[in-house]
Image (cartoon, rainbow, N blue to C red; front, top):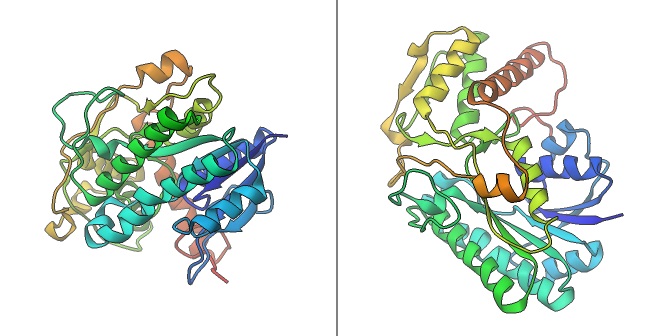
Length: 336
C-alpha cells in the first residue's frame, strides 16, 4: 500500500486529493495547524474524516515537519500548506512569506535528511506570473509577482526547482490556475459569489459587494485538478506543469452567470472599492498543452457547469440550514 502525506489537508485541494488517494487505496496522512477552532468540515463533507490519519504540525518548525515525515514514512508528499488568500497577504506579508515561502523549504530539507526517495509536490500558483506580457502562460513564461503571496509562492517554486536540480530529489511544481469548487473558502471571490447568490435566491440577503469586476481569471474545477497533481508524481522524471482550462472569464461574468442560474436579478451585484487590492493582476490565462501531452490530463468541466455546481451546492446548504438540518460546511460547521 502506497502512503501519502498531505500538508494542508483541511483546505480545498488537500481534501479533494485525500479523497482521490483514499479511493485509490493509499494510506493517507494529513497535517493541520493547531488553531483556536479546528476546521475539518471538508473532510467530513467528503466522507473521509475517519479514513485519514491527522497529524498536528507546525510547518515552520523543522523538527515538527521532520517528525511527521518519520511517523508517516510516505512515498509521496503533497505540499498545500500556505497562507493562500492573496488579499490577506497585503495585510500579513511577513506571515505569508514565512508559511508560504519558507514552509516548503523545511519539507524539502527534511526529505533530503530523512528519505531522498520521497516524491514531493509543491503547489505553485498562476499569481506568480503577475502582469507578465503574454496572452497564455506556460511553463516557460517569466514570473512578475505583484503581491506578497505571489512573491512567496515564487520563492517556494524556485526552492523546489533548486532541490530537484542540486540534490536529485523528485520534486515538482504544479502551476495551477484558479480552480474552484463548493469546497472553496468564503474569502475567495467565486465562493463569495455562490454563497451570496444562494442567500439572495432564498430571501436571506439583497446584494453582493465585490471588488474589481473586470479582473479576468482562468477558472477550472478543483476536483479535476487534483488528478493532474497526482499524475505529476507518477512520472519517471520530475518536471513542472501548468494546469489550466485555457479560457478566462471576468468576475462580472462569474457573478452574472451565477445570478442567471439562480434566477435572480443581476442588479444585486455591486462593486465596492474597499474590496480592491493595492495591486492586482488584470488577466490570467494558462496553457496546459504540456500536461495534456505528457500527463494525459485535460479539464472537462466547462465554466457554466462549474458555476452551476457551486450555486446549486450553496443553495442546498442554505436550504438545509433553514430546515435546521445538520450539514458539514464552513458557515455553520461545529468546531468543538
